[in-house]
Image 1 (cartoon, rainbow, N blue to C red):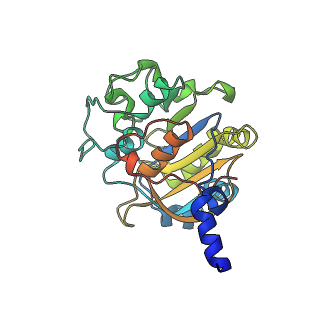
Image 2: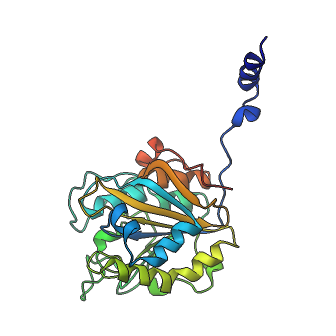
Length: 274
């Protein structure tokens, strides 16, 4: 038997030696921030987003990350429930009964909270705030009656003691600070002021910060930035093609949860872990 044949045979009988899939981390906490309506090219070439550029060097930047569709709301559903629910607009309200990340975590005795800036009060079910800075179209949680109402919180409830965060938290800045109605520079400044402390903490507490966008600006085939920062992340630029379903699939796999919706068809992100 040739040496090459021996190696191939060894791979068949011993997949661990041949290169089994790497183990995923099981983060103490994950905070996923959803920004709005900017393409990969716009953000990563901009001079007015220095903090986002800093995060892209400190963590894993995906250079081929894509949203699912247009407009905004179906992409939030994709990230939370693994399905756009057939929605093709930003209408409100809706009532869905499918699987979702909050229910999956709760079943596993883990926790989930979405923190929405400028939401008038905890457990708010309205379609928007009077100042129009909060919009339910960017918050999928109220659309699912199965999710405990306590999982729907204003960003003012985001704990300063990060050890008190839920297992997984989604963070939605307001309509200015998420870049929807404001500038990329405003969104960049908000991220640094409000989440840099957590990003630095995550690097020493086996936790993750994920920054992604709901969709692009309609000019770049829905290509968006996605950045992952944390203690278990190998910094670098990765050309693996991913989308929102892949991000959701990775979150469920990290905690040993059943895949959700089209997340079952997603590809787990494995390349970036130490």
